[in-house]
Length: 263
Image (cartoon, rainbow, N blue to C red; front, side, top):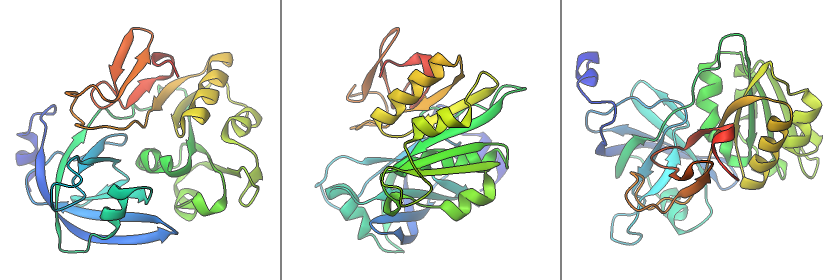
């Protein structure tokens, strides 16, 4: 695909395409990285955007599943997922050479940190998949606070060590890093107005981090994970509260300003 052909695609266009599976490998117990190559002209994804992926060959399940872009190189798209239900169990069975129906890239992307602000990333569990390409894009500038319930739920730690300016690990059971949770580690880190904060993780973690950020007058963005049926803003199934009313995570998000959502 030439640069000129990519430029011909409107930025806001919805792209539905077939994709050939290149690899689908387990990187941790029940956690996989699937790599696919689009079989049609598509826009390159930006950190924070996501895809709707058809996980079966028949009508069951009928709906595609949302997965954030985990990495992107030489036209190949990577997604990281944990097997949690029927959809991801079907995706786990996909083999190289098979073709998937994909829609995307969708949603808005993470903004760059304002000039003079130090980027700090707070991530929990498999949400590291959403911020991983951002950390990579920032090229050693971001401090990363990454936590999970246990070490079995943590992935890509060696890779993060290589792309983060500073990496702080924590688990609730103390099996990796400090025995603590992400909000507590951010407090200990010294989060302040000189930082620009990126947040992605479970709702409880995100709520506590947003509260801490408000107390410290810290600006930034949060990426929300919600169940999505369509991914294009038609069904309203992923609406969340904001100070200005309800907004769709798939269409107006998934990335919102820290003070732009009510969790």
